[in-house]
Image (tube, rainbow, N blue to C red; front, side, top):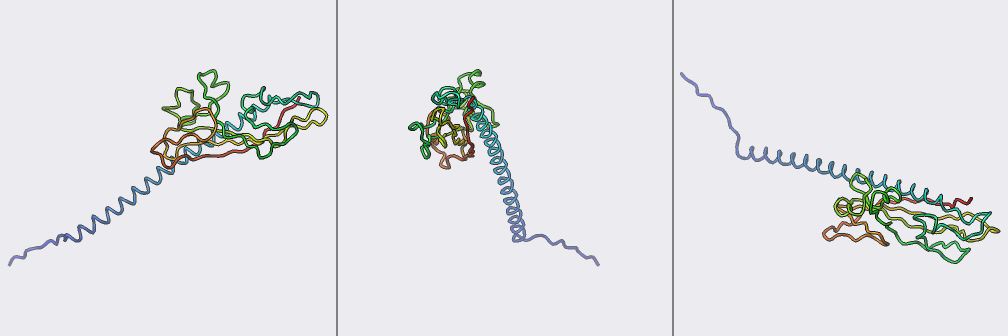
Length: 216
């Protein structure tokens, strides 16, 4: 007497359930991977922007060392606009006033046209890894744009008799496209233009410091 063995297969329902579970799991893994990639990209750009902003804060501090007049020995007018490279944009008011509330607009410094100018004055434009750019490189490589603005806290034009050191509030912001695209960084004042097709606009990192005159 012979016995026939039977092997039970899978029904169409079971196959569909298995495929559905596989698809859900795959979608979950892909979503986590995308979130990880986006998060890493955002963190990297944030780190680069932070380093660029810190560099510009230090550049303004170094520039303020040339701001030496007036002093207790010399009642000449303040030389912040003539002896420094970046401080001359501050809004000036009547002599002897603090100019509190008179904000300078956001300023984008001039782009260097060559390596010598880049070394001397720095650049407001940087590429994806934080390398300062010359003028001809911004259109294809510009990922970050630095702007700064200044405001008097203590005006210095008081003469030698009533001398007190001048004090400015300096703000620096580093702008970059939320989408990671190229950003224009043309010298001037105000916000850079948001390119067409980038509705999310800019993201920014802000820094603030005080700049004190260096009377001799």
